[in-house]
Amino acid sequence: MSERFYITTPIYYVNDVPHIGHAYTTIAADAIARWHRLNGRDVRFLTGTDEHGQKVMRAAAKLGRTPQEHCDLTVRRFVDLWTRLDIQYDDFIRTTESRHKEVVRSFLQQLWDQGEIYSAPYTGWYSTSAERFWTDEEVAAAAKGTVEELKAGKLTPVCPDSGAPVELLTELNYFFRMSAYQDRLVRWIEEHPGCVLPDHRRNEVLGFLRKPLGDLCISRPAARLSWGIPLPFDEDYVTYVWFDALTNYVSALGPDRARYWPADAHLVGKDILTFHTVYWFSMLMALGMEPPRQVYAHGWWLMNRAKMSKSVGNVVNPSVLLDDFGPDAVRYFMLREIPFGYDGEYSDAAFLLRFNSDLVNDFSNLVHRVSKWAATPLGPAAGFTAGDEALLDVARRATATFRAELEGLQFRQALEGLWELVRATNKYVDSEAPWALAKANNTARLATVLRVVQEVQRMVASHLWCVCPRSCTEVLSRLGLATPDLRVGLDVLPEGNVARAGDPLFMRREAKAPPPEPEPPAIKEVPMSDTITYDDFSKVALRVGLVVNAEKHPNADRLLVLKVDVGEAEPRQIVAGIAKHYAPEALVGKRIVVVTNLAPAMLRGVESRGMLLAAGGADIASLLSPLHEVAPGSIVK
Ligand code: MSP
Image 1 (tube, helix red, strand yellow):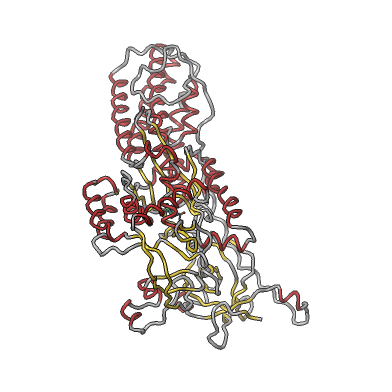
Image 2: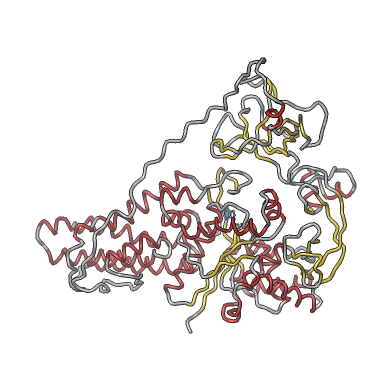
C-alpha cells in the first residue's frame, strides 16, 4: 500500500463567520494534501467544526433556535466557503456527530478507569455576565494590578470581558492528571525535534513546560452549561470543550485509526499551540497513543497591526475577494505573501500588487504570449540549443526547490523558487522571439521554441496546481493533459501535439478608488412641537454603558472605535463621530447613554453596534452621562 499522509486543520468554531485568517490554515492544508496525493501518497485531509460550548448555546438562545439547529445552519458558512475555495478535504467532522461523541466518552471512560481523572473542588473568579471562571492572573490584569494585590484584597476584582464585578466561587469538578506528564512531555519534544515547528514555537512550548504544570479541569457542571458531551461517569457534568475538540483528530478516523494515526501534520495558528502540544500530547500519552508527528503553528494575519478578528472588526471577508478575484488568486496570495510561521499584514494594495505582478504579468503572460501559435504542431524532442538546455536547468532547480520547500511547509519559498522559472521563461520568449521566427518562416525552430515553452508551462502548471488548481487545470487542458504531470524534461509532450488557445488566465486590475468618507449620520433637529406616541418612544432601547476601551478609527480621522459594556457578555463595539471632541483616553471609564437596538452598520470597514447620545445637535457639545455611578446595562427611560 502507498505511503499514508494524514493532515488536519483546527476545527473552527461553528458560530464564527469565517474570515481569511480561518481560510489560511485550510488553504495551506489543501495545498499540501493535493501535493502528496499527486505524488501518489494515500492522503487523508480532515477539517471540521467545533460545535459545543457557551457561545453556541447563547447565540442559539438569542435567535430562538436549539443549539443543534443553530449549528446545522451556521456550519454551512464553512462548508460553502471551502467549496468556493476549491478545498478537497476527505472528511469534515462536526463535534455534535455521534461518531465523535462516542470516542470522547470512550476516552474519558478509559482515563477514569485508569485513575487518570479525579474529582476535586475548583476555585476561581466567576463572572455572571461572561458565565465563566477567570484565573487570578486574568482578573488581576483586568483590575490593573498584581496577583499579590488581588490576594491581599487591594483590588476590586472585575471580569476581563465586561468589567463587571466577579466573585470567588468554589464548585466540584473533574480533573485530568496532566501534571504527571510534565517530564514525559519535555522528553518527547526534545527527542522528536520535528514534532513542534517552527523551532521558535518549539522553544516556546519547552519554556512553558519549565514552569510547574497543573492538572486540567475537564468538566463543567451541566446545570451551568448543558451544550456539551456528558461525562460517561457523571452525567451531571459535560466535557470541557478543548478535551472534546482535540479528540476530533482521532474520532474522525473511525475504523481507519490504525492506518492513519499518528497524524503527520496538525496545522494550527500560534494561539492554540499549547492546547495542541501540552494538552493533546498528554491526553494521548495517558491513553497509550502516540502524539502527532508534527504540529506546525503558523502566524496571524493582521490588519492595521492587530490580529484579524471579528471582535476587533478588522476582518477581511474571503467571499468578497473570491467574487472579485476567484479562488486561485486568494490561495496564491495567502501562501505567497508571508512566510508560514510568521505574522503578516493584509492590505488590499498588497493583494492587488501580487495579483497584477505575479499572476497577470508573469504567469498569465507566460501562457498567453504563445497562444497565437497554439495550433502549430510541436516539433520533435530534439535539436535543442544551449539556451534551451539552460532553461531546462532552471526548471530542474526551480522544481526541486519547490518540492523541498513545499514539503517543509515553506510555501512562500516554494512559490518564489517556481517563479524563477516563470520569469526565466518569459525572458526566453523575449529573446527567442517566436513572432520573428514565424515572420521569417523558420517553422522548425518555431516548433522547437514552442515545445520548450509548452513543456515549461506543463511543469509550472503541474507543480503550481496544488496552490492554484483551477487555472492550472485549464493550462494543462489547453496542452491536452487531463491531470498534472510532474516530470521534468522537454520530451514529455508528444511530437505533433496541438494546444488550444484561450482567454488570458488573469486580467490586470486597477485599484478601486477608496470610498468617500461617509458623512456622519445627519442629526435631524426635530421641532419641539412634533409629538410621537409613547409606543414610538419605547421602541428605542437605551442603556447606561461603561466605556472600557477607546481607540482612533484605523481609516477615518473623525471616528473613534469604542468598546462599551452595556451589561452583555461582551462589550459592544460602537463607532462614533466624536474624535474632534474627545481624546480616546479621556473616555475610558466614563459612563454614557447608548441606543442598543440600532441596526448594526459598517463605518469605514469597522462594525458599529449601537449609538451614543450627545447634547448639542450636529456640533456635539457633550456626551450624555448619568449623574450617579449606575451599573452598566441599567435601562434608561
Ligand atoms: N475551535 C478552536 C480550535 C479547536 S482545534 C481542536 C479554535 N477555533 S477558531 O475558529 O477560533 O480558530 C481556528 C484557527 O483559525 C486557529 O488556528 C486560529 O489560529 C486561526 N485564526 C483565527 N484568526 C486568525 C488570523 N487572523 N490569522 C491566522 N489565523 C487565525 O480555535
